[in-house]
Structures are given as structure tokens and as C-alpha cells.
Length: 253
Image 1 (cartoon, rainbow, N blue to C red):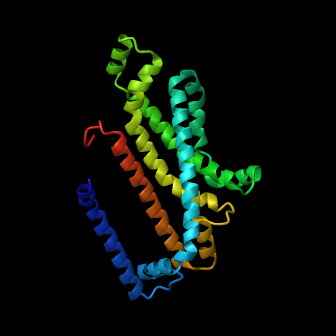
Image 2: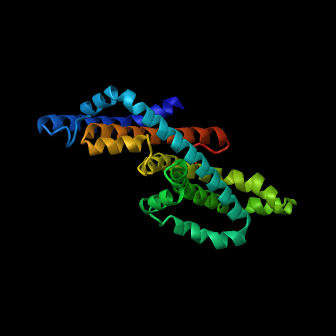
Image 3: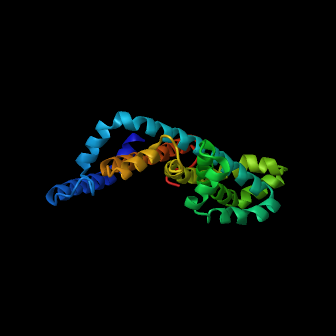
């Protein structure tokens, strides 16, 4: 697995290093001001020098993102199961779920602050709303893609509705569920940062706001780099969990 990851990852790594090298060269050659566009070396120095100050913000964002992702995932999976097992409820509520995603988070956030204050609850609601949709939709699609012949065979063998769901539909939908989890995992970090803009005391969102207001652009890029790194770590963790839980899935499918 490690060899396969290295084999697949060296090309993106080369592209990233090339971009950073060109960025460094152009920043030095054109003498671009640090407050406008810092060079990668300056961003690196800011990240190393300000680690002690940045660490509490990073920890706060990780806690918020993980908690929101877990709650959003549970809510999305439970909702998908209920909608699949109860067709009447699916017909009534599925369009409303689609419509809920048309509400901009930047508009919903101030309303949540008015309703629930500046505590953790409105921030969690934002992350749950963002993570819930891709998981619920992916799970429903997975349930619908269950092999009809296998389902018919189980029904002929005398399996009831719950047994068909437990033994066939749920395992069949797991790859789709994990696809939704991967999307939600990457969204959870960014939604946590957006939620922290509501008025949190600490977090990467707070760190970015303070840095941008004082024209410390290098610190803004440090925050962006950590956001990207956290998203990749979350994605890799879900991908590893998928490989562990879906060992029956053929390689490459």
C-alpha cells in the first residue's frame, strides 16, 4: 500500500514543488512586497516562528471540525436510511433536503448567531449542514444501485425488509457512503473555519481574520496551508477506513 501511494503521489509532489520554486523565483526577481504576496520561504519562516501562537488555533479548529463531521455524518447516514426504508417520507422530504443546500452559509451564519448566540452550537450546525448533504445523497444513491437480481433472490428466499437492508442494501451502499464521507471530510475543515468567523475566541478562522486585518499576509498563507493539509489528512483517514471496512470490494472498482 505504501509503495502504491508513493508511486501515485510523486507526480503531484513534483508539480507542487515546481509551482513553489517558480513562485519563489518570481517573488525574488520582481521584488514583490511581503504584504502583497510573500514568497514560500517567507511563509515557511512565518509558520515555524509563529507555531506556538498558531497551535491553540489549530487545535480548536481540529476539535470543531471533527465533532461537526462526526455529527453530520451520523445525521446524514441515519436520514438516508430512514428515507430509503420509508418511501412516503422520502417523497415528502427529499426535495426539501435539496432546497436546503440552496441557502448560502454566509447568509445562514448570522441568523444562527441571532438564534443560538456565539457559543459552539451555531458553529456545529453550520458544519453539520455542510457535511450532511453529500453523505445523505451518496448513501441514497448507493441504496438505489443495489443489484435487483440479488434483492429479488433474497425476497424469494423469505428475507424480510430489514434483512434485505442489513445483509444486502447496506453493504452494497458502503462504497457510495464512503464517497460521501470523503467529500464531507474535506468540506468539514473549511466549514469549521467559516463558522469561526462568526465570533469564536480561537481557531484558524480567528487567526486568519487577525492576520488579514493587520496585513500579515504570510500568516494568512500559513493558515491556508494548514487548512489544505488538514483536509488531505481527513481525506486520507477516510480512505484508509474504507480500505479496512470494504475488503470485499475488488481492487480498482
